[in-house]
Length: 135
Length: 319
Image (cartoon, rainbow over all chains, first blue to last red):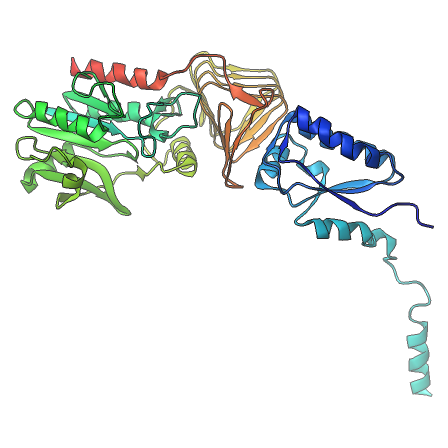
């Protein structure tokens, strides 16, 4: 059963001040309220980000996590990267070089979904082969 | 009698006289406090110790101590032309004139370069470091006749003095950080202005450190600087005078220039902060942070503070 919609990529505005945050949230808000929202924010154009912008990113992350979704940042400009590091939030977000990589990461099978130990019967057929050869 | 002319030329800033104010990013790193005193002031100190009788300084058409020659119209007069006027005045009164463009921080022995100049018997001597010429000359004002293109004349066929001391070209923020690091680690003669409260940790007068704050050597906290509670100042960080680092902020391998406020809970690394400007050396990016909660110029008025401080030194020397 499909429990979530497609991955949505959104372009973050060049300047993230209080006014721009308000405008951006009007677009982003409805997406956050969907079931298991999967959002990629393209930060390639960001050249200035005030604390209101950082706060918005954290609020969005909190909202999507509450709904069992995820929010990832892609193509961070150097400016955005420096500001997120400065404000100690860089490590909170999963970041990707490009939007494509970020989108693909939503479809990748998580490593812990793959069994790490081989089941007890994994070598049975090999052993049978050895027995055949011996006989 | 020996005189010195110091040039502080702001290339690309024609017609402007912005001298280290907080309104603009520092165009001239020599005017910025480094471990408690600007390179320009340190140059004056060095000349004073080296027995120079008078120091005249020019910055964008401004002259100290006697600015009657240069006037105050930077649109009509360049610093080099103003320096030429001063050279004219020096003829007859001084045996030699040392000219230094303080864009470069260079450590030299005044007596040694003067002795070399006398031995060579040429009208101009220029210092040369391993990586090329240094903007430091000795001239005989009586034999040096060029007035219109002084800089060109200084560089054509001078006697070459081998500059063996430390040289930093101060061409940008990276060089500035290197100078701070070299000063804190005793790799050059530039010493922090303050008391060494414990090995390689210096504090200026009236510097305040909050509770729970950790200062890891080498580090410098300038006079009147305030470090809030639970901060971390580490690995070659200098907090210059009148700056404030607020609660819980960490600064690593960074410079917080004079009169700068750095907000709460930040993580500053490999950077230089000056008022609202931030240079990040790791990402090689310059930012203007408009959010005053994050960083801003401190309330203290700083217009031309460093320059006037330097002027006082020059006046003192000339008297």
